[in-house]
Length: 215
Image (cartoon, rainbow, N blue to C red; front, top):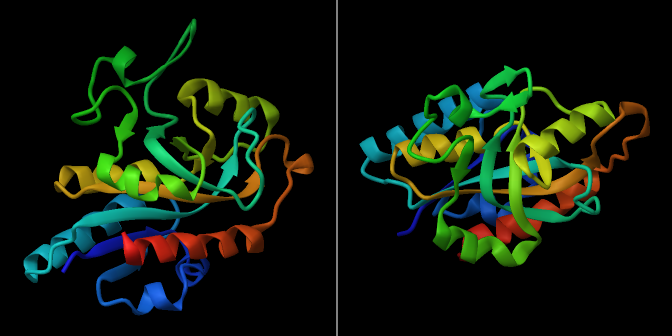
């Protein structure tokens, strides 16, 4: 049986995947907590535990909500499928601006710079859910226009969230195909002018749950 691990940050994202997804014997959902450390640790633990039990995962999906970055033209409730998960902060601040891990001269993994690749087969399977593009993984969310623009320029991403690159990276280290899929819950930029609709974004995640069961 093909088995899928889904990693979310909070319980509301888990519930949003839908009862059928949560009841599927081929799907395990882990609520990791917020941020990259929780995400990477929970992913690695779950993969190792499943392998030790003789029930290894065939795929890992990082799922949840995200903020739309400037210029993405993403509507709230839109699903975004990552073709790469990009660490936004790792690198070096130089007089001429930010340099990613290539400028620093040390690799983060077996990939170029800060862009963690997703699995090609999973991208084909999930790519019909919505726009495809990079999703940034941030430690500090963009609450000003300047911050949101910096993330966009550094990463070329459509949206930002706080866990995806860590989940996909941890899975990659373990040799398990992985991808990130997010529902847009808000705009980024100045906090006072952001638009939010978390219920709408969570409702959209139901389609991700359906795809996870059928892929």
